[in-house]
Length: 330
Ligand SMILES: Nc1nc2c(ncn2[C@@H]2O[C@H](COP(=O)(O)OP(=O)(O)OP(=O)(O)O)[C@@H](O)[C@H]2O)c(=O)[nH]1
Ligand SMILES: [Mg+2]
Image 1 (cartoon, protein in one colour):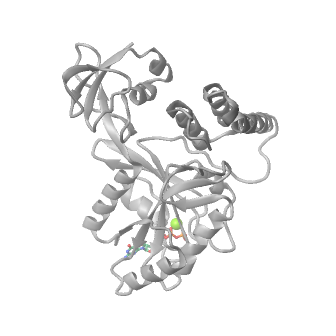
Image 2 (cartoon, helix red, strand yellow; image 1 turned 60 degrees about the vertical axis):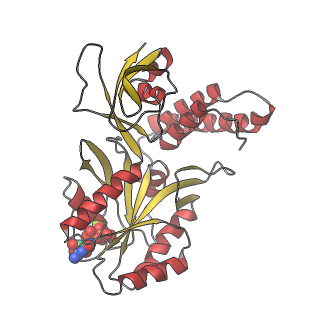
Image 3 (cartoon, protein in one colour; image 1 turned 120 degrees about the vertical axis):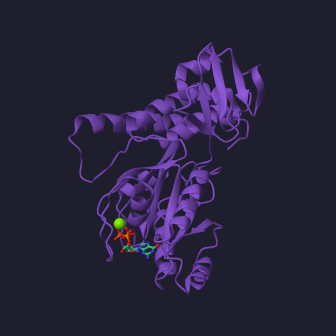
């Protein structure tokens, strides 16, 4: 893909990846077509986008007209600072993770194949929340088809690995392989592949459960022989509250956002409801979060906090820091 695509286009492309219905996809593609620089170097992408737009529009029509076709699908409205999907082989501790970190009440059983449907929950971290979604197990012979779309449109994956089970290295490699066969790479970053628009990469953290097992490290080593991807790894025993707290911190960090508080002129900052924007995000990113149209009409902002002197006026490109307070002026 040529490197001269604008940040605005790349933002629209990421929104397209995160779209949860054909109608949303069509809207995003229209925006991408508007934003893409029109020159020879992008002709191929423009043609590709037009084909995709046509397909998405057709799909949206079918979604509307036919009573839902065969095949289950689930849609969980995005909430909080980010969305992470919990994946893994049978009995790996996926539902226990959701139960320990959120207010959701999934069934946690000592036997495998106890989860049959995805279930969301919100994980609190200081004054923000992260959406976690538990899923049914994936094996070398079975993958719920709807999971592929869910993984491709999420922000990241928590891949559970039962450190107390000799089968875990192969079982976890099988999960990765199942998605790889469907052009969905559990890896170290999230976004479309640079060379092949049909391939999506999703940032993944390996969560080693039951890590107190004496052979845990050995099983991790065996897994690394099967899969060379340098996943970030966090070990936990869910019976140890300190380890659970550490996992919570790591999960929040994985979402890679900062918190920004907005204020109206002459009013105190709205401290109870921060907006979250990507690390290195700008005033423009914040305006976009507050309201799409605001990003266009934005003139300047006043910032209090680490990124600017008290009340300093800054432009839309100004990079914000965690806990900055911002007054947007249109
Ligand atoms: N002691 C201990 N038990 C754990 C840990 N993680 C999971 N378990 C137990 O392992 C069993 C399976 O956990 P689940 O969370 O139901 O596993 P799952 O991955 O959701 O399983 P399926 O939905 O069947 O794929 C339960 O009895 C859990 O309490 C851990 O870190 N420590
Ligand atoms: Mg489960």
